[in-house]
Length: 400
Image (cartoon, rainbow, N blue to C red; front, side, top):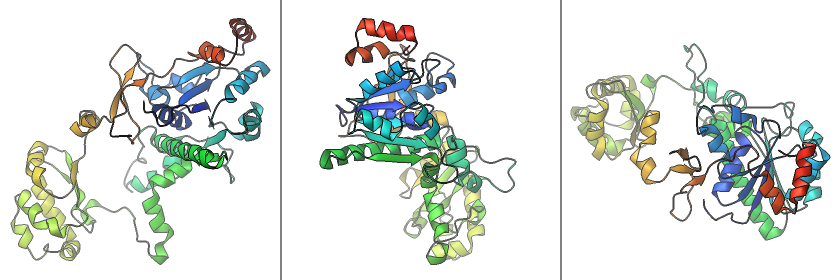
């Protein structure tokens, strides 16, 4: 855990992955994050992908937090939230307007408990427009509606390309965490608490921003970014190539001319460097089909391991299309601490860390995600409740 947000208190009333991932990042950065969960069952995400000692999805979105199980529908439970909010700095929620109003956790309600609190909302499609009150998950709002799924799906495909789980959630979560940090800075400098909004749709647009910007400006400088065949890309050195053992290598040489001769030597085809069809960027673009066929033939002649050795000294950018196990053992991932151990389960467990580090130090071990309501009594004692008070709240069903 870093200390950049040490002393900051965050209260979170949200579920699933999007807003909770923001809370996990804030906890990684040093904040004390209280996850408010329903008394019955808690966060419904707890029931997904939980098949063993460790629930990896829950860990990703909730590690480092404390869990307080409260029934906000009761006046006593809402009173508990009011006390917890009085010394909080940030309130994060992903509930829709109707639910926020029913539980009295809308902006005005929360600011009545704490006028200085920063209020952060995470929604599916934003707070305005015809679908503002429609719920969303990242597969629908960030992947399908943003245009990414359609763009990546080939016309001949039997079905749209399916996203990896939580893509929009993770992008939206770290965006919201950054916004919270900026709002804390503004409040420190100007004394004004912010109201923050982000959505899965907006996160999807941001992931797809290059293509969308090109299309939005087609008539004034944008270029056609329609996805085409790999055999027709204008720069054959920005393309994927299959190896002899059916693996793929990506070349990403955006300025290929300074690298062309060296590249041809590295792939064992030095004669291509002098071939007038391929001697310059313009020539290769004009003869792209022939050039790609030559490179396809070259890459198909050797295995991935052989290509790793041959291209090790090539100065242009390239990478292997890695499998998931390969990513987890990638020496760069390990050396930079991009995977962190999770403390608290009694077994070896790991989690991907947020893509930022402070003071040249890896994040280090993170505390395990709390069990449902694990710190309920602890948090109430911190906020002035006696054991008798806690027992009475339990009898009323206001807390777990």
